[in-house]
Image (cartoon, rainbow, N blue to C red; front, side, top):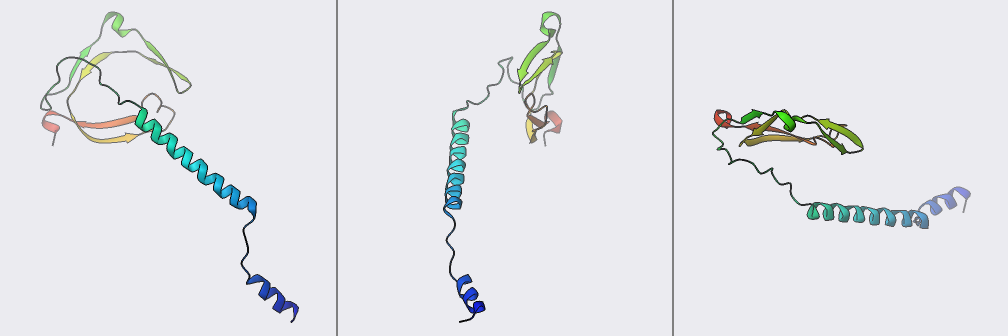
Length: 127
């Protein structure tokens, strides 16, 4: 048997993966399963957002109602969200009954404050 024949026969034998690679693969699967379990727990435990109680609901055939605010209702509101401080100055109340035509979720620097954008249709536009 020549040296070339010995190399060919040796390369045809199955190679067992190193123990470290097997442990790493097993650890990756465990981390993935834990992450999925945490995500499901968060989604199932988080209560749905409630709408702000207000006046009687509008019919979807009516236009939105917007009223200017005055006095102390326009005092700035400071929120600490996502490690940033946000100052919001209320200007008006807004009441709408509409159909959601589309929505987009954001993950940019403003998303902790406004993570979703909605496209709405109401009244004559609701088709």
